[in-house]
Length: 503
Image 1 (cartoon, helix red, strand yellow):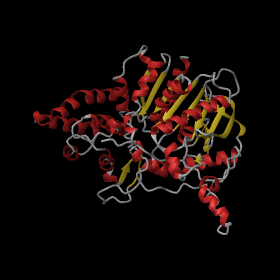
Image 2 (cartoon, rainbow, N blue to C red):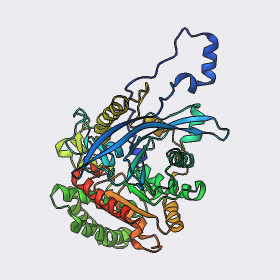
Image 3 (cartoon, rainbow, N blue to C red):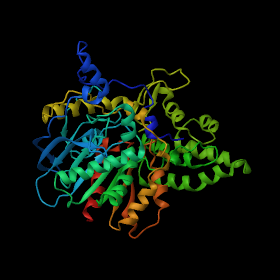
Image 4 (cartoon, rainbow, N blue to C red):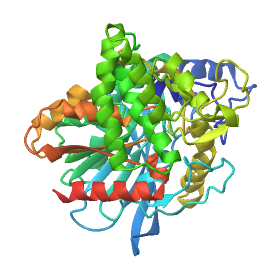
């Protein structure tokens, strides 16, 4: 059964991600100063952000050299009394010219910075990470990104509070209240989008929002909040491996067949890929079985004694797993058990985010997995190293502080009481409000953290509301970060360009 990205994203103990520690207060500071520090821990401990800084750069996309301005800067978050309670860092890539759209990008977690979309998917430079065979110690040297979107849209990457260099200025309790809950998160991030548009005179531009994983959860909610509360209309959303309906993915599976319907196609896709047979035709057969005979036989249970036999036979064929393992599971393949079983004979573990990305199991005889996810282990170092070097050396935005590519602390502190409501309501409402809004939902076939089948079922239950192409689901080879594969990244680029060209 699938477990949410936000829960598994930080399943292991926090790993060290501090590159430069913030300066500590001197032990011999005057007593009065210590009292003031205790009263205002935020202002006493955090150095001020530098002023926004811009450098000129070039990249090559589709054989064409593009010049652009790369800006690292920040925007304040104000409380209802006008006091600055946080500073949010952004990185913007702007190509000079008129009538260019602007796209805002957010990753997820909660607790992830936007570095993954920036240096992996759509920014002007790319660092290789997230694919089988990549190593944390590989050179983190950015190269021109042939899958970048910069030739057809300006790009603004936002790091939520507690991620990247973005930081809160208030106490831990106040930080949780203002930033680490579902609705508060949506409201201040929507305001950051609004404030950037006003500051840069871009309110009249075409506007798009792209969110990955929990960022995909944020996408429809931010769009709806901007539409209905801040008076800004988005032209489109691109939801990358989105976490749209946590309730469906977290069902305990005792009665509902839904959790097993969501994971079986992804497990089958991984097996087809290992055989060199993964394509749209073979996946169509898998999806048809999942929606048809599989769910019917699951619901029959013991009322039809042959139903289990049929399930075990077909699931064994689709998954490539040992028939005894499939039989013990009743054809209901729990994710973590599968990820250990599929590579058990090799002494390896598969990743929840792409089960064909593996690492050695350091505790192969333990009854439970005792290490972090293989893909997460491999992406921290290259992305952090490349981004901090870009910000502090290439751009020269000098800041002495901790850069959080992934913040385990933010994830642990997150208030999830409203999370299970998901974002499907806001997705439907935002599409209904604006008859020209377009939504492209994209997944890797091999992602078990946010399986593509969930989005297919969600969209298939939506009313058409006009043009059936306004809300589309596309899948590609690969996992959660399918864009780590060049062919899949290019396919994503083509699909996004087609959506942007409609307006």
